[in-house]
Length: 358
Ligand code: NDP
Image 1 (cartoon, rainbow, N blue to C red):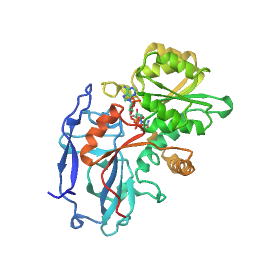
Image 2: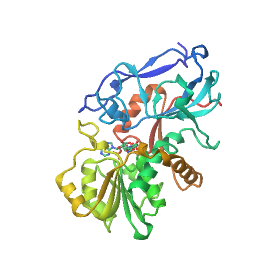
Image 3: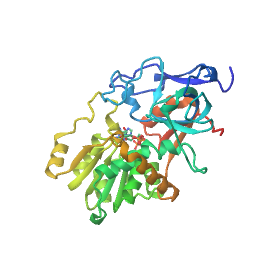
Image 4: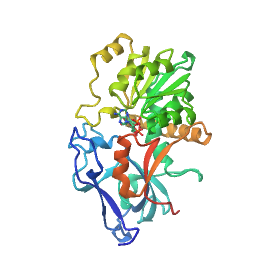
């Protein structure tokens, strides 16, 4: 066995539609090293540099995902995750990529393997300034950044002249930490985050420029939120759903907007998506004419190129800060997923698989 033996993460146990995912749902196994000889026209060998773990993977652990754009994982099969960044190691004839190219998946799907064979069409080349880590494609300059930006732009109805208050739940996570900053850049006057620890609250206020942050795991969340949002809440970027969202919506102003991005608080429950909300919350939405629209980033492909350009510009100018929590080694991917579901990440949870050669 060599130290750099090829490895793959395999899905070995379903947590059950109402179960909590644990690290024993995953196993890391040795697998054959892809060779140049096996490549067919247009193919290449990719070396994974970073893997993304995402809340949406939770529904892929069930027998049915409940959504039409992602399929469930099969038991005892290598896992395909929802994002990765890698480097091209070898190319076959007529491959549109070159050795050394930095690539991410064209369709989000990325095998949880150190090295694997891919069609060139399944990958797209990424050009990054030399001083940026490839990981930023997963933590900001890709689906995560686009979710935050387009969620705000398409569903936030932000009007700088109205001096709006934005509240973000899951605020110290990948999407949330960007959404709060983007809401400010787009013109919100007051930005308040809700997250699960005092350390995270401190990061939001001291590093990312949120005006205030509330730890939802402490008592009197409603009172603390009210004190932080004296003029009520106009825009709510909702990453979590559940009780936190009921509290936020109860404090929203007339004609407000809820960006229904995700509902992680109930991902371990067998519920349709979006999950039902209490009648009292529905009444508040109706009586105050609050728009609450489901937002799905994959519905806006025509906005991706412009969105990525804007995000890249903000990062370069230092106006958008990107936080990452990086676990080392592919064998820690399952643990990193479980940790992220339990709130142990600040910013984007990633797995570093290898250094870049090229
Ligand atoms: P995060 O980096 O935010 O990680 C998940 C976070 O959720 C944890 O860090 C934890 O933070 C929080 N959390 C976990 N359980 C609960 C709970 N019961 N109640 C409240 N918070 C909880 O993940 P992402 O940024 O990748 O995703 C955020 C949301 O955005 C998810 O709901 C995801 O499904 C959604 N999403 C939607 C997309 C779309 O197109 N609509 C695209 C991508 C993501 P804490 O310590 O604060 O509890």
